[in-house]
Length: 167
Image (cartoon, rainbow, N blue to C red; front, side, top):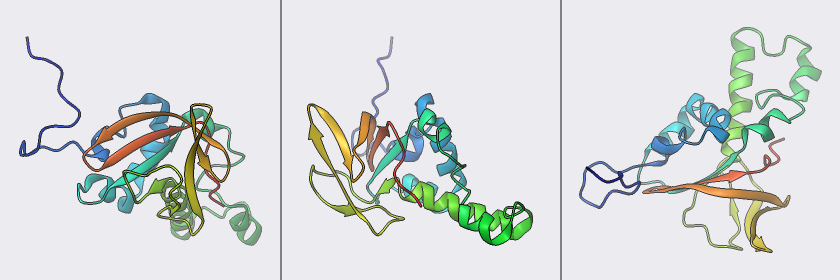
């Protein structure tokens, strides 16, 4: 009987497991994984074994608790009214906002040592993580890392209890 398939194949196997292969494995983050699939630049990065990334994937429950959908921006409604996301222009606005949401949850580094300040792909703010009482916390914001769901050739998927500020 064959053993389990390793998540990280040995080098030279010709079939490296990359982040795009594992994003949909954990049902607790499938909303975020779906958003990633909808953003071409994010999908391509996670499919590229040459670009290491730490994906900070919020739990479905964290996304569901948001006061608005990740593709909505109150400024759009303020400027354009209730039909801000209607038609082709509205679709493009929604895609831009969703890309911003996804990219602030993607760190262009892995490994990512504790205390090392980096900028997320879609953000100018320095972020880092630290460990307090055995719990990893993303800073700023004290966002709890629930677990590290996957470690593959080009990075890791960290599951977050809440979302990063993406406004």
